[in-house]
Image (tube, rainbow, N blue to C red; front, side, top):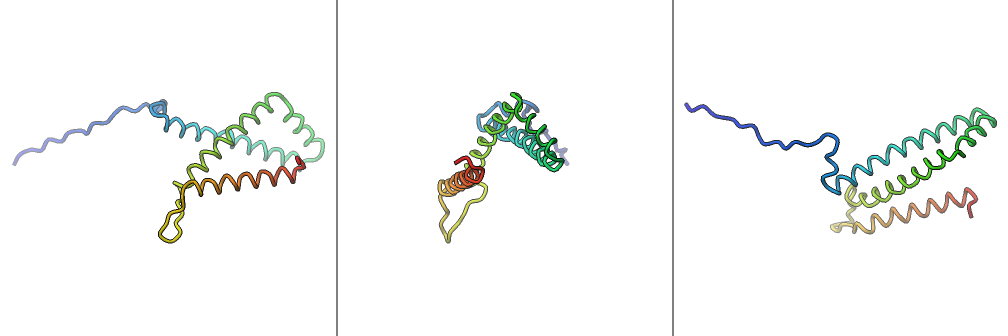
Length: 134
């Protein structure tokens, strides 16, 4: 009986830290994932604000004073930019993540993404109206 020789399959070396620089699609994916970090930090700041509000007027005024610093304003602008980028990439991904079918026909991707954008605009305008921006 002949002895079988097994070969190790070819495996390409992949950098553990820089693999996403190889293709623009990977870079966009990683950029979208990094935006989650800033959104998480903003969420923690929002929770801290709610805690300070529950602690009383003086604690909340100190919190508001901290939000008025240049570094806090810069962070909030950066977080806003990342939140907008994250929203755009998610709305464009939605038709692929959850394709809709009506009968035998598939709803066009542009209609699904467009519905997300319209909802985003309506909710944003409603919140601005409630906040007294208009």
